[in-house]
Image 1: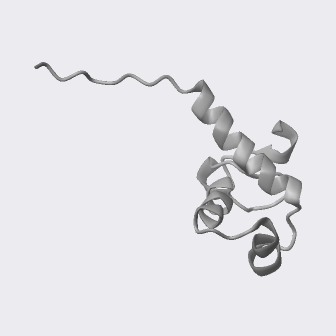
Image 2: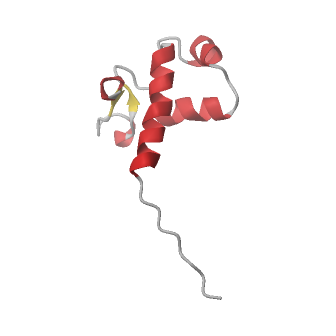
Length: 77
């Protein structure tokens, strides 16, 4: 996965991008959230992407969530 995602402080303020492009992972995920198919994203927005790049964006987001520690504040009764 890491070979398809790059983080460079000089590109988009260091946000993760699809490697070899200036396409932020966040932008790809937002298009998916809007209900666009992989094919629509490639055809209408980012023709330089491959289906595997989009899958990797999803996997990257999953990996971040898996690594995140969640601490819930419990309100007193």
